[in-house]
Length: 464
Image (cartoon, rainbow, N blue to C red; front, top):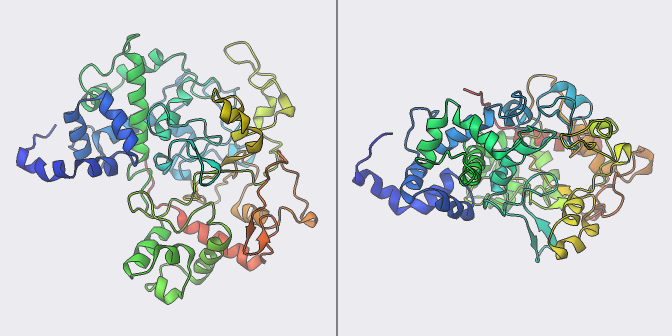
């Protein structure tokens, strides 16, 4: 590791807390959690981004460690990594064309086993707040995964909590224990980097040390997901946003296209259709997919309010989870004992099984609700003609279909299938009309689609 003279460190030391948050995690609570796990001096070196022989250019050591863990097939059998379901080429979600065309749910390491939902994107995930009930909104906010169950309560960062889940889940990476994960890491080519990042003795697979070691794995992966490789803010929209603010405009005007194009977009970064789409998006979509509020440290908007909604999504009849009544897990029980009768209750299902009785009491009011995802990278594809799947179950296959669904869901003549969960369906009034019958014409729908395509990051990451 490069040796730095104390005088070289002084400017960074003065700004240490802010620098740490910007370079590693967007949440102060995560910094506090890390301070419990590693010495202050090591934290400072990580925050400064001191170069490591194994680190890629621009990644701090902890981010590089997270990348190694993200791309390593830590599974049983050893055929699946985080990247197997979260590919940069597809916007950090699934990049298997055949899966996206049909059920959109991805196989586990045991190839006959499937979970019940499409992989969510991991891009921008560390910006999600810890799962909580917001009294002002009267709604649950934050967490990770479609139902919010990766709350962040363990490690102070929902992305870190989420990163640990798949390792031990039967239909995913299927590792039998934390010790088994630790043994793979200890035998890896990046084992030295692990101890360089977290300190000597941190790669401890003993009964007394493995819990802390496992937590460090999650924090490292979340650090990588917060890096410029996974969350780069380098889309066409981001160029427009920065130019709009630099021209002296208000963030809300920029994010909703409220004003003259020549004033908001003086260099013409968005074409006329994309700008028209931003106008429509600002009126009908930005209530949940927030396009006008900067990120927590002044970044461009994150395009989610981190809440949960039931927008009336129908079942995906090709979801392979419905067949999992005939496939047994390691415990000898069917992965899905309900078979075709399975109903995905989303947030309500998570709350109903929670230990907090107050949350249990709110389960029914949240049945059918799923996390509002960021729409960043919503059309990023692994090649020309590559199919993508949308919604928590992948039932829709293109953006045109998604936008038309929001617009016409409740128009009987359109013939949309019934919602999987028919209660708590969002019918909020937007511009005087209800969601599900927005009365938008084909030109407006096409403009929204054109705008959504400006949200694709340019960065594409390879394993090495």
